Image (tube, rainbow, N blue to C red; front, top):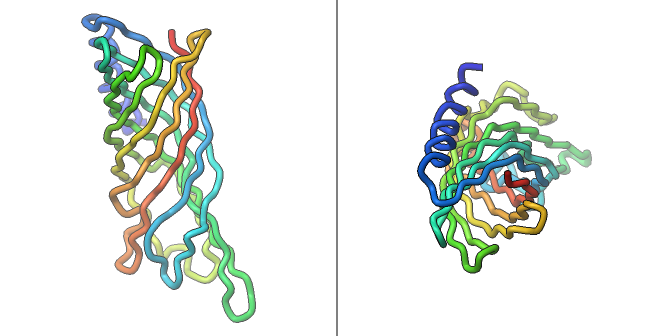
Length: 196
């Protein structure tokens, strides 16, 4: 709870400061689909095809100054990876379910009045981890509580106050604290938001 409060306070400060001083201020909820995977080295052989489906849900605020805008967000996101390995003529399933509270700060440039490109850093705070790693001791891998990443994407303002966005998130820090593993999160996101 204390961690969530620390995340929400700066978001609220930016939100209300933007409302007081910006040329155009909007905010609202967002929800969407995650196509998540892990990139890096495995304990044995890492499989590039380890993607899994997930979701994200949260809120955003956009502070717009003509063609430029700043968009802070906070959202809950399910990420991780899933793949199978053949060991001794048997199949071993690996399934990592990682849940984060992500706090990105997106910088946007409007190409037209309704289409914008965006990029920015993101801080992720691990809130839940479920691991199925049948050929290893479940306690052998320790997950890092913090994940730092960068985002790039495109957003489109639609009629009825809707906003559609596509984004690629590339993790820069290791997901697992282990000397033989350098897994990093990679997430493709498709989101639908509503602007008030």
